[in-house]
Image (cartoon, rainbow, N blue to C red; front, side, top):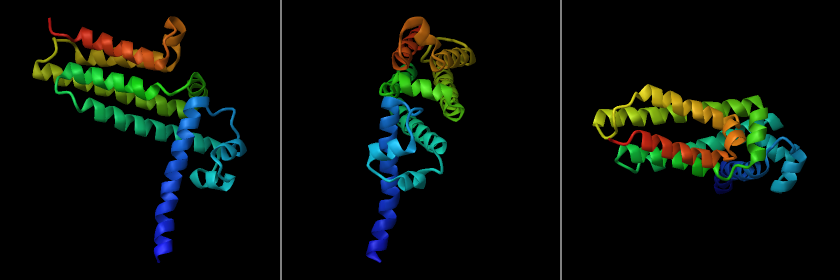
Length: 196
């Protein structure tokens, strides 16, 4: 009985650990060039262990990208919950997005852009992040802590810039990586909503 209990809790824990190792590997090196054999070798596990996580490489990539964004979202929300001031909350949120994206390599972003299921996960997270910034602006307007601005416009502008960051357009024009671009966006939104 005790052995079974240990195994049943160790299985999910090991799967979570493997997913976390995969996240770190994929963020550093991307995923397109890897085969399942190479991933198993790098993680020192069997291919059947990887098949326990997902039925194919494509499904494994989706699981890994989802895990990355789930963990990133939780960390970002935790950081944004700390400040009381709405402008500080916007800044904390966007800077936390920047920090979460910092470990992601150009290879990761290129592979995400080229693989539709992963790209959709990134796009969905980008839309959610823009909606959160819009909500912070609306809350600040209601509380009178930011200058009168059009919250929907700010949300749409943030979404547009985030989309351009995601598509690599900001990097192409400015040379900024995604994390640096989010830091610049945070500064821009916070300055733009400062009380006069």
